[in-house]
Length: 99
Image 1 (cartoon, one colour):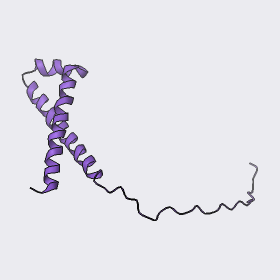
Image 2 (image 1 turned 45 degrees about the horizontal axis):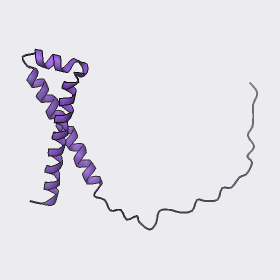
Image 3 (image 1 turned 90 degrees about the horizontal axis):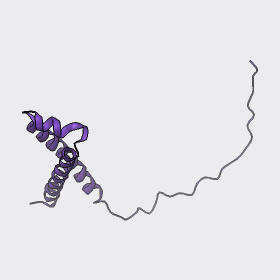
């Protein structure tokens, strides 16, 4: 299996693990009464599943993006830092009108 695919699968698993922790914390702390809503509704399991899946997609995407961005080299290119141009200070007359 290519290294990039393994990296993606690993980050998706990590993202969904973080989603499980996050949704568990939301329900355990009863944020906005979510535990009450989910536990008293017959379709509450669908809401919990949707919370888990959609947060998993977001967390997996963020994890993969962080992993990809960290793959860049630490070497800085030689150029790019020019000395600033010397400032030339001169007076400029500004006409003022009375209203």
